[in-house]
Length: 88
Ligand SMILES: [Zn+2]
Image 1 (tube, protein in one colour):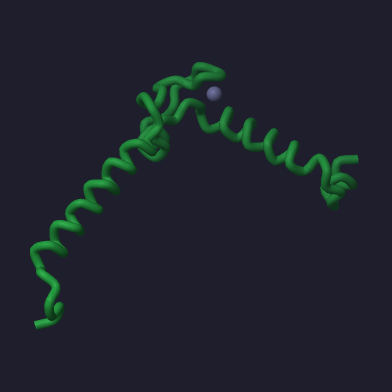
Image 2 (cartoon, protein in one colour):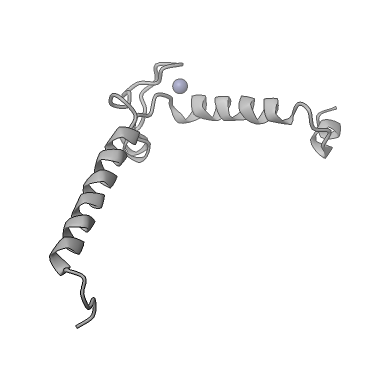
C-alpha cells in the first residue's frame, strides 16, 4: 500500500481542512452584495445572462464598454502608437 508510515486518516483530515480554507477564502473573494438588476450608470436593465456571468455586476454591457474604452484610452495616452495617426 502506498503511503508507508503516513496515517491515511491524518492526511484526509489535512485535505478536508485545506478545502474548507479554500471555500472560506473563495467566499471572501465574492463581491459584497448582489449584482444590480439595473445599470448603475444609465439605469437600463442588465440582462439576466450577464448578471449570471458576472457576479456583483453593476453596469450594463454598453456602460462597461465605455468605461473599458476610457481605461484603454488613459492607458494609451503616454504611448505613441499607430492609432494616433488614424485618429487625425
Ligand atoms: Zn448602462
